[in-house]
Length: 331
Image 1 (spheres, rainbow, N blue to C red):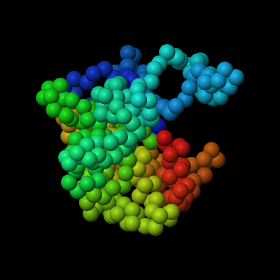
Image 2 (image 1 turned 60 degrees about the vertical axis):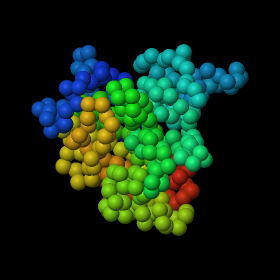
Image 3 (image 1 turned 45 degrees about the vertical axis):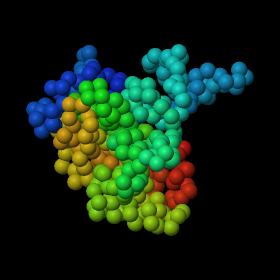
Image 4 (image 1 turned 180 degrees about the vertical axis):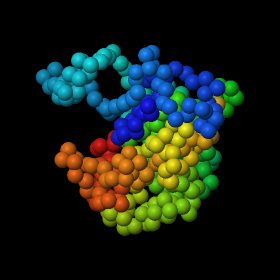
């Protein structure tokens, strides 16, 4: 049974052992590609759901004020009664959202996955001046993904390739799952979903959908729309913050016209033939069989049929509400 992509992030470091080079073949080369095999001891683990809570404390900062987890008793009791609660965990330094999440995803200290300083950093240009870059970028984005000729062409998620001693993009956390035939769904998870609607040479829309594609044209028009309008937020809502990296054999991407190549040119062992769904416009219809996705506990939806945008921050909500919603719900 394949992992059903949902509105949660899944991390690749939880269950799977290291995947051998033989497992890195193209999905079309695998006879059992349609099966998700998580390789649990008894074969009874079918899904992995990984939740990350940013800046949630177990201990009290003030002895007279309940801690963050104490103020969420249902969550605390669920962990206590159904799992293991580790309280001797220490955050990475510098302790910020981006590098903390990325360390969880990769199992690497921040200086090994390219983001030792977060949530933004400065880099040197050739003339000795500096410029600012964000830690929140899609996995394969460059340090400078805005310039027509990048001022720094290194990967944002840079690491040292031990085989060649050259800088490469850090291995992606979804690869062990997708090579095992499992779909890997993510929402609002640092750098494993699209992070911008850029239409320049290094922009996410260009790299994933291609210049001149319908998605690229939507983003171009949306980016040019008046600030604060629903049109300005349309591309952000449709393409940023949600993705499914589909398993070998196609998974939920199989036969889906919205699927796009899931490109990881630096991935050890190669990563060709894999597909992904990028953005709520593609993900929502796939996980809801074409129906609108509900956005509240009453089961109602603010999106009409045929408008499968993210209902977490609906296209009906203009800026700044939609941006605020994304920052609170997704980050």
